[in-house]
Image (cartoon, rainbow, N blue to C red; front, side):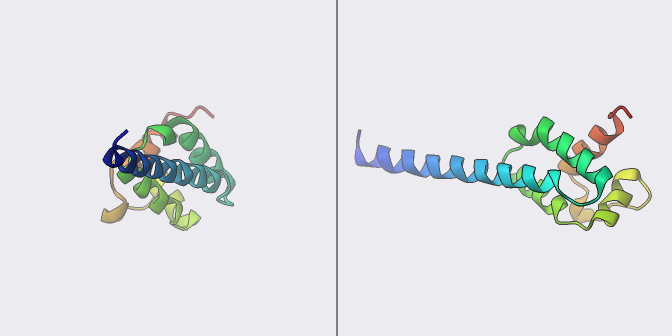
Length: 103
């Protein structure tokens, strides 16, 4: 193995580990928001979609996890307009996922 190959391999392993660690942290946060209804929605969504999110989408999901419970609940339920920075593909996936959950 050439030195450049090793450096490239190490870099890709670090990037892979980083996204895996971020996914685990996001799953933990999704399961423990503190607002029962959102815990259920976010945890189920994370179980279903988290592994398929790429780095950019994971960053958007992490940003959604940072929004206060009462605010994101209003967005998901359609009671409040979603601000532009949060109105993206990952929020659309989350909202659609919530709409398809069976009671």
